[in-house]
Amino acid sequence: MLKNMVQQIFQEKISQIQRTIPVNFNHPITKTTYSFQEVLEEKTLELSSSKSPDDFDTIINSAAKKYNLSPALIKSVMKAESNFNPNALSKAGAQGLMQLMPSTANQLGVKNVWDPQQNIEGGSKYLRNLLNQYNGDLTLSLAAYNAGPGNVNKYGGVPPFAETQNYVKTVSKYLSTYKG
Image 1 (cartoon, rainbow, N blue to C red):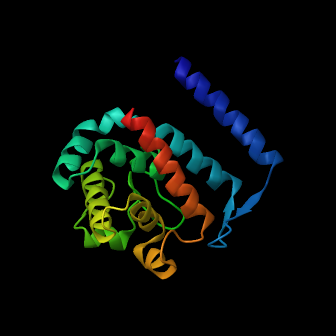
Image 2 (image 1 turned 120 degrees about the vertical axis):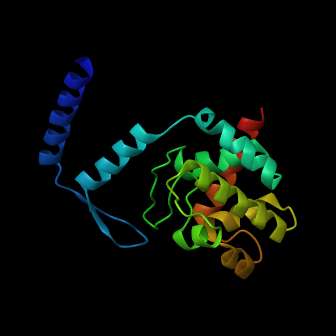
């Protein structure tokens, strides 16, 4: 009952905000316009769908063993990519916990990106492939996970994209946290 009252109050406040701020947001890369309602709904879904890394420990540990990765690395990528939200969908189209692009998921044999087991397996396999491709260089592998191997190869290292440079730093920070 209390939960319903809180939800009702929340909805009323959201409606008030929407009426007073009829704002559209333009995505800087895709140039797509999103209404305040769309942005708010997406952020609300992200918050309500986010889970703890512990919720996925069994899957993470299995994938880590299978692909010779540390569970901390898998958790760090998941935290940076989706904040442990199995329903995450980026504006670029990346999907699920490890934010797999549809073409990458297809190449990895992932049939259902929304299934945490398949998504974590696919993302872990992709991480292992990248680590193999870049001779175990974690920085280059993380950059390739974020910006694609083509960009890492093109620039001969971490691409000069702020997003990718921040991503590598963020995952590295999470990695030290999850290792500890």
